[in-house]
Length: 121
Image (cartoon, rainbow, N blue to C red; front, side, top):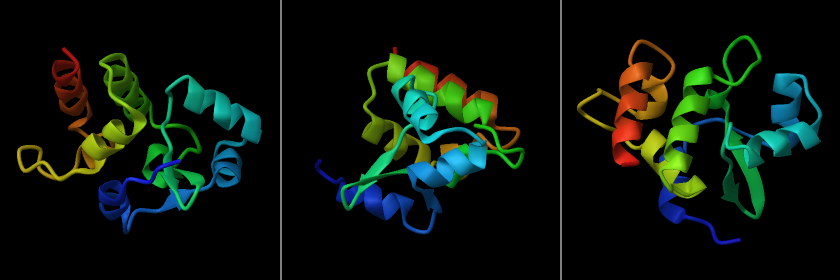
């Protein structure tokens, strides 16, 4: 498992959850978390040989943010790898402003998904 050092830098400062922590936040079994990753409802970052999911992917109601899931699905369908998806979501974009992942938490969600769709074409 090769680590992406640039991605490590992008995610620095963001809370990353282990698979058991994601399961606890969502109120599901760890095996179901792996199913969600496989189905591209979420993506994980590999750091120090362990998989982590950004806490921003989970909303304050204990569910996967539907816009995050939608953007991940669109990007994955466009051929983006998990690392490329995370890089896109966590890279500053002055035209938004901010990072796409932050835009998915509020009123910019539809614009972020529209841009993701355009990138996948």
